[in-house]
Image (tube, rainbow, N blue to C red; front, side, top):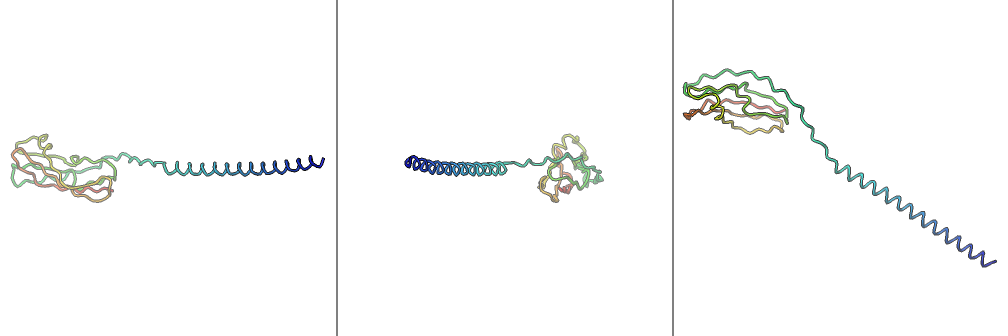
Length: 155
């Protein structure tokens, strides 16, 4: 009977140790799962791409025609801009030809003159600032219009 008591006691100690080890193991697994969840959440947050906001369509700015300059020589083309300054919102579209109100010449028609407009000056539609563009037109005789200057303001 004494041996049975010793064996029973030994088995109880062995079972208690196994249960303790199992509980520690289970606790360790839970900690590993929580850590893995935190890592996965952090990776998902880091991988999120913030969409670039789409600029709202801007209404075309109201433009008023500038007076037509009198050419020194009637043979040279006369180029007229709608305005000497245009303001646009950063990121919106801008056509460099849109500020041209009219072009006239003693020989060439408007369509052929429009194809020979040269615009100089740098601008960036995404960077706010003030940009200067210069417009000239050349006719089929090689005559060049007086330069017209446009100030493009990107806000």
